[in-house]
Image (cartoon, rainbow, N blue to C red; front, side, top):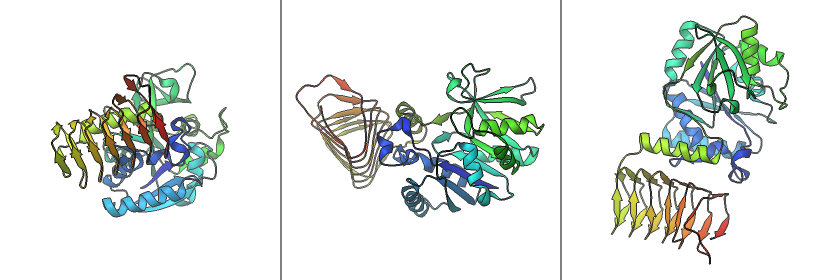
Length: 358
């Protein structure tokens, strides 16, 4: 079995951050979102991985993946496949046909994270031999997603992409397993009202042709990181689940409470750090409060400031801001510093290389 990771979207809902880089490389708990999917695929023993990329994001994603493979020792090969325009998930499948060939494959959306072990679903697919296996999750806002309708035997009878009036609350998770029949189905469908070839329409084509499509409902979490609040929620979940107390940096006259990871080369002086928190390599934090569910990237500098429940990317500077920053997504090398008039708390999303005076 092969794997196909889709990493070519423009990330319009995460602008301005995605003006300067692919959304799949935005970090959650100081690790690019894309890497969580690769970790899951590698741990399921898939050795041949294709990554769909856009022309503008290809170079950055290739560089990040090759560096990640060297650092994290991923035991697989990567093939980068360029999708010239965002034509939909089924279009991405067709673009990857030469890479997939006649093999079954797992398709993983590069901005998604799931808790479950992929190997369980792969083994079920290989045992049952359907044309497709889809993963579902009960959600409160199904109109945002592809939605599945099941019969009393839990068989998939209908799929609709972003319905105005959903027939169920079962959303398609961004992980699918297909046989090569999905290529024929993708060629037989027409673009949706969005002008894209929808993977839901391709799977519905298989169902309409009487081909078996099975579904499994996830019990653990599923994180779709398409918007700022989704990124912050994913950061919270990952820190809650995986962060450990690991102090490798230098701590001076500071209180470090709970599960806090401080990477090597970082200097913490005169601070209160309250976990779960992760602080990247080479960060310097002075006379500040870092509250729960915060990720501070490498080489950040924070002085005389307070931040919590936020994601702060590499090289950002937060200086002399005496009131709390919260629920914020702060881009690479952003500068936030004190201005004249300041309320008690701020919430911001700031793109790379910006400067804000508060």
